[in-house]
Image (tube, rainbow, N blue to C red; front, top):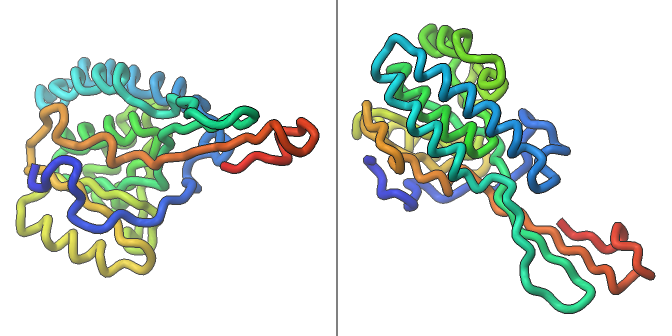
Length: 224
């Protein structure tokens, strides 16, 4: 990739719950994992049946992401007696996708789906609109087309573009109002597994429940 895996080109933005994904699904570890697995399986089947060999090449990535996504796999952390602390990886607000061909778009989409987030494509891109319309319904739920990228809500971006174009996108994203968006850059056509660091598409969540206080009413002592 044009950026070092795991090292963003910009300072990560402030994390927030997504408006494009049901809030309740983001609040509970495991709530979206089955939905994501179903969508990735549908995307894998769709790519395997594609007439374009470049799109078919993404099928193995979809299969790997089904097995390896850490989305909503909660872990109980050590803590004092009477306290339960849970940590998990949740979906981000949204991920902007920038690419000039469908195979790169599908490769980006597979990673965004694996992270339980929503990919944003520009509504003015006829090829992107056509691809969304051709996707299976469970996958289309993870794709949003927007008219104004600068006014849209997302906290990550993936771009399959040449180096000069990557610089322009980095500047454009840095000039947005609000938190700076981290940009993950890949060269056009780079679709090897690992080219997009999956860990950058998640946000960490924790929940602490103190059952020793409030007379055993855990709901009064939940922090998350």
